[in-house]
Amino acid sequence: MAVAEPPVVHTHELSRRFGPVVAVDRISLDVAAGSVFGLLGPNGAGKTTTIKMLTTLLRPSSGRATVAGIDVEARPAAVRAVIGYVPQLISADPQVTGYENLWVFARLYQIPRAEREARIREALAFMGLTAYGDRLVREYSGGMIRRLEIAQAMLHRPRVLFMDEPTVGLDPIARDAVWEQIDRLRQQFGTSIVLTTHYMEEADRLCERVAIMHRGRIAACDTPERLKRSLDRDDASLEDVFTHYAGEEVELGGGYRETSRVRRVASRLE
Amino acid sequence: MADTAKPRASDASQAASSEPRPAPDRWRAVVRPLSRTWALVGYEIRKLRHDPSELLLRAVQPALWLVVFGEVIARLHVISTGPLPYLAFLAPGILAQSVLFISIFYGIASIRERELGIIYKFLVSPASRISLVVGKALSASVRGISQAVIVFALAAALGVSLNLDPLAILGVFAIVILGSALFATLSMIIASLVRTQERFLGIGQLLTMPLFFASNAIYPISDMPGWLAPVARANPLTYEVDALRGWMVLPATNELPAGVDLGILLLATVVLILIEARLYPRMAE
Image (cartoon, rainbow over all chains, first blue to last red; front, side, top):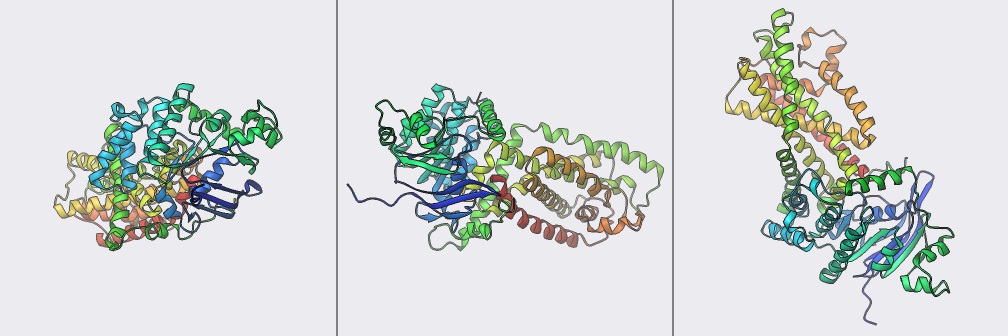
């Protein structure tokens, strides 16, 4: 094997409590540079809380995390400069055009004026949105909105891209398109990607390694292949793996808040 | 709850200082936050260009206050406004009021951006919290300026004698920009604390009328009952109106030098911005 690069994301006993509720419970994991890593689990498993801590939106209650070698608690601003983030909620602004959505972030990320226009056009082209750049996002389809968001998160060429449920609410065709873009992002830019999902199929298709999260803890963490093999059954799917490690069926119900949030996303994607 | 409210100590100052950047960068340390703030203002202008209907609808209320309320009270001669006709006394008050009403609900935009998920991306960008908050506050000022132009035109049409000295007009704009930023920041503080539309609207409504009536906007402080005058003097809107009476209409009837009013407004705005820079990240939790 080649000399191992240091992990691009590293957590040690990372925890987050909300009052008496422990949302994330002492998780320790490493994400290899250039890989796609999946946090897999049902709603309420602690995936989004984990992503929020890694993206500096939420302070850990205890434990440590580094992104690109930078401590998220000690130097949050430095972490923000090297990451991209596609939140679970649909976060493109419907009131302005696709171009303008990218423009404001190009400026917040201080992409030099001389490159700005070219970079935005390039990002639109990469995501297949060239023809729609000057249309209001209100008129976009769900798949187009997601692609625009990925384009925005990639504008400043982040080292790590965090995606929270990137395909929730998308129809299968739009979902396949997003998957293809994720593949191309890695090939072209070598971006490391951390994504959360509750779709087993998605984890299987995209991720080199997955951590199965259940009630704030990591129940298992390995390649999808090895996780499946560990079950001692020839036809095991990731679903079976989840059931095995979490000790129960994948239940997509979630609480009231989660459900209404997912519905809201889905309705915006219609 | 105590846990989630933990303030992000030194976060705002860190954002400006800990980014990796090349050597001679004192200049950049100043320019970067300003350019980010300006980006948010540009973004607001683009939004308004796509849909200016709100700005025009907002012109209805000040028009009613000036044309209906103003004309009726002027005939009654019940409010002592010294050398100033009542309409000229009222015009700066109504300008301040329309700026207040547009700003005090500005926090709803933060809540909307939270519900849409946009705020998460702002907070994950390397922009410091202060430059984000100042950018949002000045975005509200863009709306405030559009109100100022409308009220100015209305007042001129009603025959109010306006001060057209370019410096005085600049002064009016400065007051409007500061006044909008001040109340918009107050509004964002409330939004950061309550975080839902329902609770926000309740509190916004609760604040608007007391802020307006406990000020010198439609009657002078000297006509107020003894218990109300000190409240009005603690109300930032009073200083906004006072400065406008100095710069917007002739003859000037401001109580304090308009520069002092401006200083008080600036100080209050800075304090509120520092508070909101601490609270704003709560919107992403």
